[in-house]
Length: 163
Image (cartoon, rainbow, N blue to C red):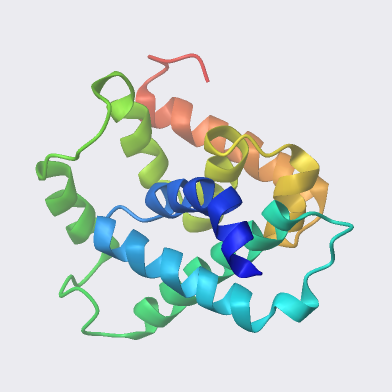
């Protein structure tokens, strides 16, 4: 039964995982973990609401769980602060489409809540309502996060790009 869903939604889900995670192996782990959770909770799937919002919510929640777990771990990545990690990461060349590398970098520097909302709305083309369902927050909160993210991105980009 799940094979049909993997075939139909797997590519978009993997794209979401790659967008959320900067490291390809972390994206692979997130993808697998999401499908494992979906398999174990398939009886909770409500066909009225659609499969893609449901699997997206599982993916985003799994990603958040991993962030929380990593934040609690003092030995997670060896960096003393997010600033020291950001300084090193800026010097590492990213594998990205050169046309959008500046904006992708700026999005990566957004706080997690804003970054996740931006990714779902702009990169995954979810509308406000779908993003709200996936994040399990009110639509107004999605709008407010998008507004705040736009403001921060404009500041980061130095008004170079129309957002």
